Length: 149
Image (cartoon, rainbow, N blue to C red):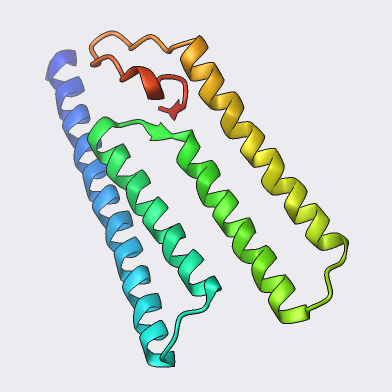
């Protein structure tokens, strides 16, 4: 077998694994979201914790969808998931313990730090757009610097 054929077969196998893994991750997200939703309907109500959990599933699903379409992971979505998870933790902590302490300040500071990280990523992507690698389609301008290959 020649090197070119080996590279093509390797590329096909990597792409097949890539798509299979994305479908598995997407299926797990849908399965978890449906399970959480059924749990909410079983309780007869949805708390703010439950709703924020559904937003986390929505953001993860959007992230998988974008990665499936573009082969690029938008860093911003990871930060959004982290902000939503910290917000969920903050609301849960305050609603269950009813006594705010320094933990609230720490979590709020972490949320502020992540929000500032989004600003930095947005500024960097507009100011210093990424260059597409040879053989790849150029990325859209609004998401150039916010991707992990």
